[in-house]
Length: 329
Image (cartoon, rainbow, N blue to C red):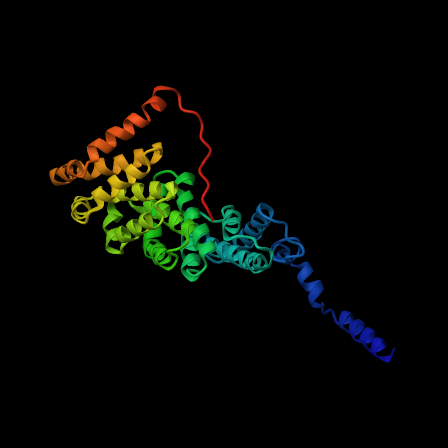
């Protein structure tokens, strides 16, 4: 009783002197009541878009009010974006800590982050997170898928800028390192090849080759011959890399042509494999007589004709809708 009386006296004296306790002081702040602090509190946090929107709004409002008093509009805007980004990463850190216990995937957190991240910032965050978690196959898979999805979410010139930023941030090297580390993980191999294909534009083909993309794609295709999805992704990537004449000559010299023809033979029943495989062979032969002869000598013409005949009836009638092929986990 004496201790409680002493505490009451202390509190009364504190209030009489005009001081505020921490709870009162924080509650009186704009950023501490119903805004940023609530959004970072797991017990008060609303999931998904509401959280991201609240964090963004609180940080932006606070930054605008403070910075507009001391600097130019241009500088204030730049600093505001930095403050906004800091708030996003702080909120995502809290969500990430909790997701370790709840099983929430990186792919879901990236989807939440889409509401506050611009494409450039998202690209940086994806690559940085994957680089730090190369040993985690699930994170690598989700990150590669998110990178590939940029091709569906963006259009030029935004897509070109995102790809440029990806390459600058070392995405090609990071993905190839992940493919080397997860050689027995089919989903990682599949999503990695798809992400590399997105970045295999004309100006970055040589960088792919220099970092070992040709070896990685052929290795994956040899390891998983039964996966039509992976064969499709591999043929697509080889076709894109073959747009450079130097790569075209190298692939012809290194035996990739008979390799592709064998893939067409094994997957004669798959129309999609036939399409991307024939496209890759056509690119290899275009403007390169030596490769064209190698295709003929390896029996490529007969295989192409056989595949065309196999699917002739299908092309003669309107195609039915096909459900997307699932990826074995």
